[in-house]
View 1 (spheres, helix red, strand yellow):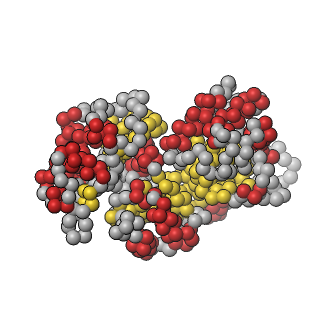
View 2 (cartoon, rainbow, N blue to C red):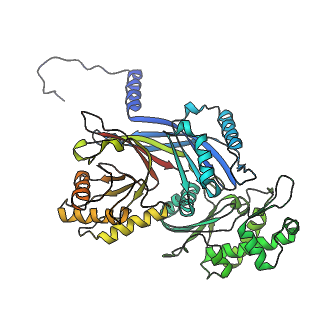
View 3 (spheres, rainbow, N blue to C red):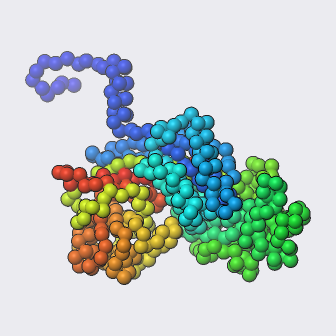
Length: 502
C-alpha cells in the first residue's frame, strides 16, 4: 500500500527484545503491585494473611483510576485464640507478639506492606480494647483501614469474605449465608451478589469454653440463658459433664436452624436476637456456611478446641437433614472468611467542581463511605433518598452524625429543583436538626459537586463543614483519604481504599 507522504523513509522492525522492553514500560506506567495485609481480631479467634494485589489503570482517556485485576494470597497465619486478660481486656502485648511473628514467618517487614485492613469484631470493638489495638498499628495509621464491625457489618464481611456473594452472583441465584462463630451467628440474604438483608443472634461455638486448666469457666450470657431454660446449673462443675454440654449444643442448634429456616422463634430465640429479624423478601435457593463451626460442618476439622463448636456442628447437621431441603454449598473460605486487605489508588478531581469553603478540614484519613445504592429518578423523592442513605448506614453500623462520606451517582439534568431535592435528602439524613459536629463529605459520580455544596450551605443553611467532590466512583465497604488542596492546580488527592476479599 503506498504512503501518502513526500519524503523517502525506511521501515525498521523492532527486535523482540525492544518490543518486550516497550511493553514493560507501558505495563510499569499503567500497573501497580501492592503488598497488603488483612487482620481479623474477634471475640474468639484472630488471624491474618498477606496478599499481593495487582491494579491496572483504566484505559479511558487520561484516567488515574485503577481497578484490581489480580490478587494472590502470599501467606496465611495460624488461627489464634484471641488472648484476653482477667479483666476482660484483650492482651495487646500477646496480640502484638503474634502479629510480629506472623511478619517474621512470612518473610516480610512492616515496611514491605503498602496497605492493609484491620477488622475488629465482638469484644475487640469495646472502647478500651480498640484503643489498645490502635496502638499496635499506630505507625501504619496512614495506610491501614481500621474498621470496628458491629453485628450488621460482621454479617456483610462474612458474606463477602467467605465468597458467598461472589458465588450467588456466578450462579445467578439467591443464597442464605450463615456464619457461625464463637459467640454469634450472622445471616445474610444474597441475590445475584447483592446483600438484601442481614441479621445476627447470640449463638456460637465458644459460648462454653475451657480455661488453661481445663475447667469450663467461660460461660457466656447466652449459655446461661439456655442452661436456665433447661434447668441446668450454669457452673463449671455442671458443664464438665459432656451430656450437659450436648444438651446445651442441641438447644442452640435448634435455635440456629429455626433462624435458617425462617421458623417462628420461641421466647429464647427472641431473647438471643442481636438485630432485627432477617427480612425474607425472597426465598433462598441454596445455603452456605462460614465461621469456626463451619469447619466441623464440612468435615474440615476433627479436633476439639476446648469448646462446644464440634457438638454444635453435629447437632446443626442432624437438624438440617431433618428440617431443610435446600442444597448446602461449601464456600471458598470458612473460618478464614476475612478481608485480604485494602487496595489503594489515587484519583485527582478537577478543582472546578469542588466545593471546599474551609480548607482547614483537610487532610483526613479513612473516612467510611455510605453508598446510596439507589438510582436517582427524574423526579427526586427526598424522603426516599434519605431513607436509602439510612438503610446503607445502618447495614454498616454507622451513625449518621459521624464523619462519613455520602456516595452516589448523579443521573439526569442538573436542574435546580432536582439538586435542591437531593440536597434536602442529604440534610434530612446527615443533619436532621440542621446542625452536625463532624465534617460531611459528598463523593459524587457526576458533575454537580459544587452546586450541591452551595445549596446545602447557602439555601438550606446547613450548619456543618462540607466537602463536596465529584468525579469519584465509590462502592460499599470503601474508605477514603482526602488530601490537602493542591495549588495552583485546585485539586485534592483522593485515596480510595476498597476492602478486598477472596
